[in-house]
Image (cartoon, rainbow, N blue to C red; front, side, top):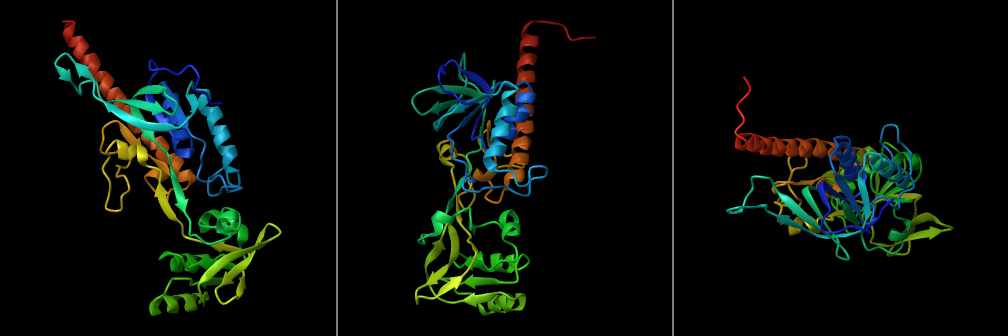
Length: 334
């Protein structure tokens, strides 16, 4: 489905989409149907690769994430979208040259540099590179990530409902996560680890029926390919069949850094409701801009970006057509 052979500096697209997750593919789908020349470049590192199934996506609930992406790639290919399996090293912003020097009259342009040398030229760019989950450094955790070490109750709690669940106290969101999980199981414990819940938080947890287990976590214990419990520093193993953790979301936004897009106080790229960044011609959608976006949300964001991007291109094309019309000396229609 992907290729890099034959790509040279002459390749020019209306839009290059970086990232073939739900956001990027849905943006490409809408743009392809709008008869735009589009390329999608993807390095093959989806965030949800460890997960066996995805949920909360109407008509696709329970589908393996890889299956969704495979179907999506087939769909965009029907509309002539080029799918390129490669890594984007950096994106260069190019201002068009007019007879009197740089000009913005024909809109922004970009050179998308791929690893190994090929360059794609694009009128607009959509960055949909996602994020990675920064996980606590606890032995045994990474091996079970996406299986019975989970993070999103709305994505995964149904599958472990009514089982003994734990929440790892590795961050400030752990208390709220434990309170939320109580609706899926009557047996939820907050493993405090380094977290020190306040008296008010302890009262809320007790009222909700969530136990707090003190003690620093040493490791997660697994046997026969399944999580068995959480071992504490005093040797106690708290039996659990699944645990939830609040990972630190780390956006894969180096390309946006290189383009000097504006950021908020937390370091995340700022966008408008369509995903448009502070740099004209660049959109950022999905988890690279919104750490809370689920698959269905990211897909919708990709569509919104594509609508706005196409309108942006149409406005540019109309302006260009008007200039040419005037230059031709044609009379205005009666």
